[in-house]
Amino acid sequence: MLHKQTGASLRTVVVVEDDEGLNRLILKRLKREGFLTRGVPTGSRALNLASENTNSLLLLDYLLPDMTAEDIILALNRKNLRVPFVIMTGHGDEKIAVRLMKLGAMDYIIKEKGILELLPAVLRRVFKELNTEEKLTEARNALRKSEACLAEAQRIAGIGNYTWDTRKDELSWSHGTYLIFGVDPAEFRPDFKKYVDFIHPEDRRRVTAIFKKALIKKTRYNVEYRIVLQDGTERILHDEGEISCDEHNRPACMFGVIRDITERKRLEKALFEIEERERRRIGYELHDGLGQLLTGISFKNWGLERKLEKRSLREAEEAAEISMLIAEAKEQVSRLSKGLSPVETDRAGLMAALESLALNNEKIFGIPCVFRCDRPVFVHNKSAIVQLYRIAQEAVTNAVKHGRPDHIEITLTRKYNKITMSIKDNGVGISGNPDDTNGMGLKIMRHRAGIINASFEVRRKAGEGTVVTCVFSDNPRRNTTPDATP
Image 1 (cartoon, rainbow, N blue to C red):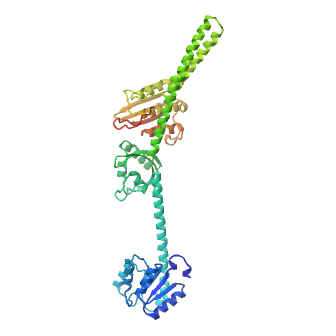
Image 2: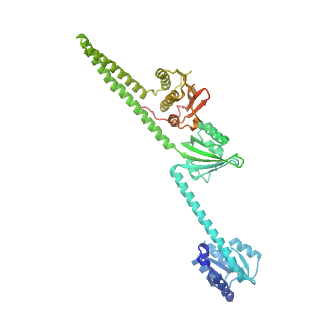
Image 3: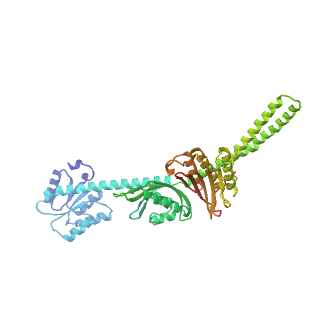
């Protein structure tokens, strides 16, 4: 029985027919077929019933005593009531049929012999269509709700996603992506060129090269870069995605997820600067506190040693041994102090620190380590001075520990505002693909480079060791980086 079903099948069929005999016959036949029914003879009563119960279906005779079926539907439309209907008429008129179909008629039936047998089949089909339409509406509403939830989640998390059809050059953004780029979806139509224009000029070539490499090799990509919004605000994004290929294994689409990491980067930079300030503070305390105390003890012990020597006492030898231990302790304190605060943050500090790094490593490890800087390289960004030094320090340590080189070279150059620092060794080289290496040293170096928006690259050459390169843009007019010093 249809009335036991769900959805549109629960609708009441309102038979609107002024022929009392035909009305009864239709009601009887439909009830026998399991339909919920009700019969009325006029358009006004049908209009009232449909207004009170929109969960009905009107089986309308076109020409009624008080109005036409078209009048009924137009009146319902004026009330913003959507009630499905089927037209019955004894006089076929193509123009009338077209008008009613445009108004939403689900079928148009001519009153003729066999109509009683025809109506149940027509109504079953109509109910099936209504059920399908209801399910589609529910699905669309669920999808809209899901999309709204996703958009809100992306807004809160500062995440967006995009799809770039490389064959059609069509770029689509999620709502979260529009928010990240600060543009209105109703006014801005994204394409790849506009997207690239958002990327900071200093990062643009590097990022597009990474995208190009991913497309050629059909691999995943993972990159951080800056964008400049239309109001001049800079944001830092993390962009990760993959390439989808067609049936011929040719790149077809680029799917990516972007995350606004500006605040995270700001906090990371602040933490690193706090760390450096603490290193420097502890270094000063070791030097000025413990170092001075050991110096005082050394003088006291020296005086005691002289007195014991004058009296020719055997304890003078023990005092001399204590002096040697004190001297060794002072040397260790000095090394610790220098290691905690190895670089001065004036604009020439990086050159002096790297030269000292090369000399100390050669002295400690016995491996020739040279610093090359053909012309003075002054760095105005104080935070960058510290981070670049720490990257060089980690690179040299990694080379000694893992590369087994017999020569290390640190190079510092400047061309306009671009500062390039490279650490090259002639050891066995890093194993595997440097981009896929998960070593903590590499992670730390990449992280430090990211803090100052510098590019970072590790290359291995067969038989030629490893080259670590860091390129940093140092523009004193745009430099707003806080001091890394106390």
